[in-house]
Image: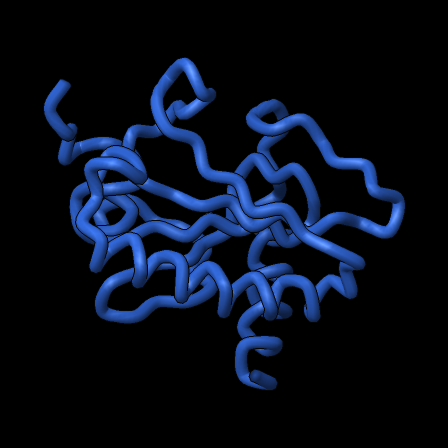
Length: 141
C-alpha cells in the first residue's frame, strides 16, 4: 500500500493539525500523546514520509532515534520515572494504527502500572503542563 501523505502524523508534522509540542528540529517533531499510557507519554516522528521502520530512509530513522533518545532522557527526568518504555510498531498485524513511523516514549510510573493506550483522551491543559515539564528538562540537558 502506498504511503498516505494525509495520515494523522504526516498532517501533524506539516502543522496542518495542532498538537502539544515538546521538541522540534528540522527533521523531527516530539509531541504529547493525546491518549497517554502514563503522564509524560510522548511521541516522536520524522517529518518526512515513511510508513514504518523498513520503508523510512535511514537518515530519517537516525534523526528520529536521536530525538527519541534526547526526549526520553528529559521525560524520565521530568517525571522522576524509574524507567521508560520505547515502543514502535510496524504494520497493522503488529499493532500499528497510524501508518507514519513513530516512537512512543512512555515513562514507567513509580507504581509500574500503565493505562491502556487509546482509550481515554487526556485533558489538553494537563498535556500542556506535562509538555512544559519536559521542555524545562530539555533545557537542563
